[in-house]
Image 1 (spheres, helix red, strand yellow):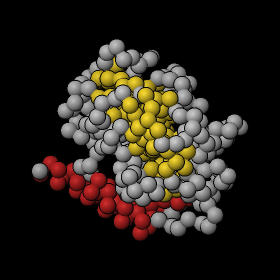
Image 2 (spheres, rainbow, N blue to C red):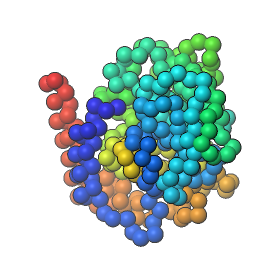
Image 3 (cartoon, rainbow, N blue to C red):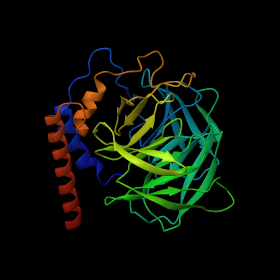
Image 4 (cartoon, rainbow, N blue to C red):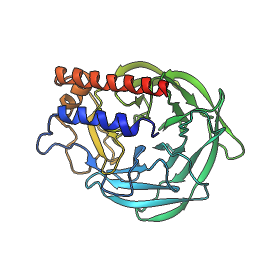
Length: 331
């Protein structure tokens, strides 16, 4: 996913960073990824087994993922996957109802050059340390032909896997079979239309699906395996808006970016009640609410922040996107 990164990502970052207010002292504002090996953090998923830990990965790398501690931003485990091939373009990660981690090697920057893509699955380790684990590789095809995708979501109660394709003019939401199989291709079928998507995540209770793109994020009510009513979210516009996940207790969304030393921004979920179990949050021992975050991110999305700043940022981002599209067509 590099066609937009160098020019548009840097330009948007300059616009947003110049307009964003500073965080108030003592606020939990997410974390910075400290590991110099993580330069293209394309996916993000909250651990179910280890509170405050987030799984991430580079998009073009060897078959490995990183466990990052949200309290420090440091990598506490590097997990190498054994039994899978050489990844092409790993774009997404999700933790399933079975306690396993799913990695989506589903990117296709040529938008249809691969006849199939892959999903890798491995049990979430009980102990966080550098290790090599056995993983299962599943072959994936789409009923309506090959396509690019960057979002893979595993439903937290049914265990069903969904993929959102990525297209400038809008993509599709695809449903996998009830259970993935190693016996042949797993055919994913289109069940809905989605905007330009770079990542997605289900809420821990499975009642909501969030999809994010470069300049916005949307939440969809989820019922009977289908998306319903849609609402816009107060999401940050970031340097390279790539990932999103819920905290394990569902009290907030964590928005990630790419690049060395990338930021992960925590935005509270309006009206959310943290789960009473020890399922973890973005950072154990920190405050769940972030009073200044909603206004700060609202400015970027036209929400409860500085409306003038938000309008300027969105206008600048839209203008940059338009210039990029025109340049690509001329090319």
